[in-house]
Image 1 (spheres, rainbow, N blue to C red):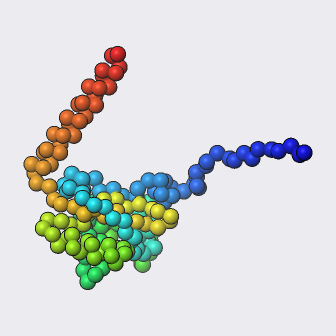
Image 2: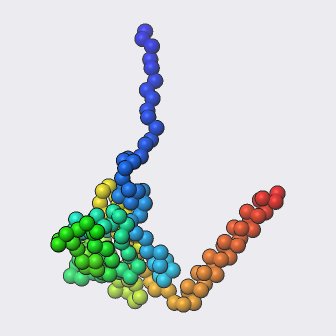
Length: 176
């Protein structure tokens, strides 16, 4: 009987070590940190974005800002407004406008669900992050309700109390 050998596999390596972490999908292209501070994020949706070539190159370099952006449903289609994607540095005459309105790609039944929810009082669509998934740019939209000033203060108090409790627990463990 022949001797059996075991098959050894190589350890997991990076997909492409020369690629940027943003372009390879390891790191988000843009994150809207103000969203969780200014809004209660109720439900999240993933949508594709229709972009031009220079916009994709600009997103790969991380020159995107979602701070003032929001989603809008018009004529049964979903649009992303006020999303700032800086013009590509090496672009030519066909470079894109930084604040143009961009179409979002999402299923019709999700659009119908969003229409019903955004017509409720005080709910809006806020982009929370932009990232790469399988080589395509995706936007994570959150159905959000605006916070009042006292809501923001309460959130800050709760966050501070949690931080102090964690620090006290860690100090107790170090002393023991």
